[in-house]
Length: 126
Image (cartoon, rainbow, N blue to C red; front, side, top):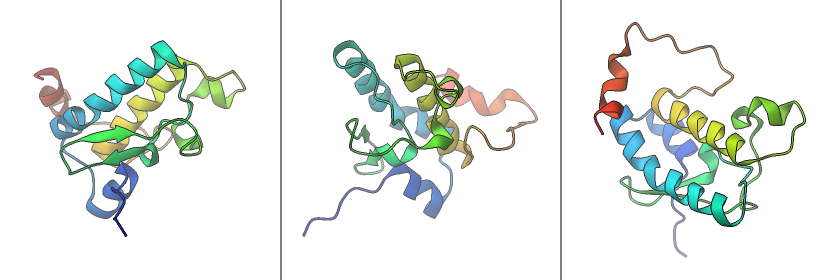
């Protein structure tokens, strides 16, 4: 029996948040596959850390829509309010995944208030 790749949610729960530069590089292929899907099939509707599979710690992929249930903690506010899911909501959810990967928090948790913007430098310099 083959072992399934861990999900980002499990990794953050078990090992803690990732450095910002590592998380950004790790999620880049997820963002690219999501953008490609938006051009062909529309909104995914269930982007969350539980939908991100970690292949080897250096690469990640997004489960297909329908492969995982939507997680309210990563659902865009307009969808929570009753709007139909669209690609913009997926982008919001992906930003929430990046937040979770780097802080262990969810988008609706207490706000993250870094003392300075230095934590953004590794992402900006990519």
